[in-house]
Length: 132
Image 1 (tube, rainbow, N blue to C red):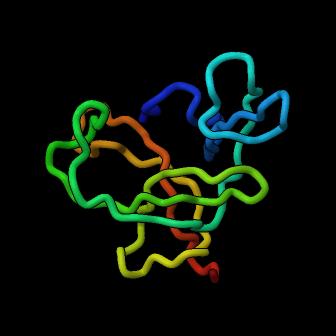
Image 2 (cartoon, rainbow, N blue to C red; image 1 turned 90 degrees about the horizontal axis):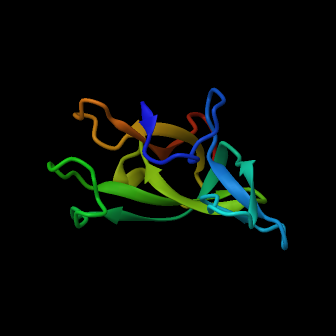
């Protein structure tokens, strides 16, 4: 699967998100902005759920490029310790089982699983057996 955007994931296995460290302040941002203000930095693969919401309606196209058949998903804000809070889908959890603080791990999922050549997007999944 090809990433939905260049420079989103590292090339290692398993991949990590690629953030940017601002050269002047040292602050970590995601995604890594184009230009020369930041140095690319691989982010942690694991974090904790900081906040979330449920996307219950199909976003407008553009920018949404997912499947026509819409199913609600969880939008997670994941705190990567000492780095940054990132927004991504939360997969592998029922809506009523989501808890702030739950431990999560980065995964790649297809934006449109039915596409001939699906694009990979970042998501986080609960770490099985880990307590909140």
